[in-house]
Amino acid sequence: MSRLFLAMAVAAAMGLFIVPAKAQNADNGQKVYRQACNICHDVAAGKNRIGPTLFGVVGRKSGTEAGYTYSDAMKGSGLTWDAATLDRYLTDPRGVVPGTKMTYAGLKNDEQRKDLIAYLSTLH
Amino acid sequence: MSRISTSVAAAILLSSLVAFSPAGPALAQTPTHDIPQSVRLAHEDTLRQLTAMARRHSRVGEIARKALPVFKAHFQREDEYILPPLTLAPAIADGHVTQDMRWAIAMSDRIKADANAIFAEHTTITEWMSELEAAAERSHERDALEFARSAVADSLYDTEVTEPTAIVIGDYLRAKLPPGQ
Image 1: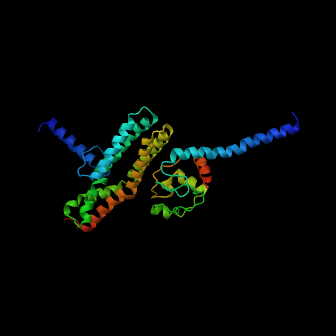
Image 2: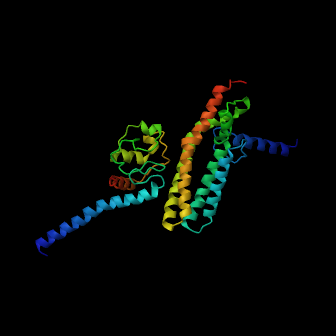
Image 3: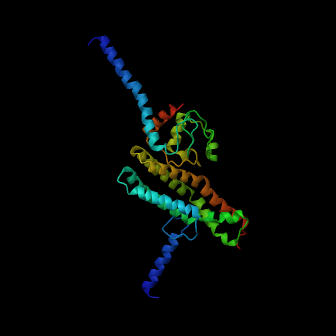
């Protein structure tokens, strides 16, 4: 095997392992969303249901999606939904925002939570 | 009274005391007050639909069988002390407040005391409905999917409207009815 071929093989392998792995996290996250969030949350822009739309949630200030009636607790929480805050909130919603009306006990699986946040990050 | 009948009476009395313990969970007992007829019909319809789904030989049926007792327990709690105060709303809205409404104050206080347990029940219902929706989507059981979404919306309605309203009724009665009368 020539050096050039070896280098190409390594590069191809790295491509295979790096690019799809990132996409796969979000894909898994979409599955988690469908299983755990879809009952209350839509992902279309402006489409609020039982919960506010998750479109554009990453980076949004808490309690600010137009057209959704938030609890006082959420309105006053002063959070910004970055990855770290979402991670804490999704682990224990009522622990982070006592009085939130989101009836969800929390996503305890670290990997699923990470994948879900990766998926939410694609919704822009 | 014989020893047997005394012990039977004591057992009945004891079980009554346990059943009416204000700190305890909603236990099997006959509600002492009516609930709004509209909600009674809604509950009957919910249980009828869920029971029908529970007979299915599918994942939807399996989930419905697990969700059914959760709904029954929650409705029992609601029938016992969350919904009865709401029957007073029309009279209060008409400006009538009377001593015989005082029972609703204790129920309202119990809703406050049990808020975490009630919220936990809503959370469990949402989780089951989330599973039901996902299964219904996979198997194209449209009625189950709509049922799940509707049930979760009802749960949010209880959190946003029903339970706070019942508490407000109790607090209003406490303010309007002088103690000790």
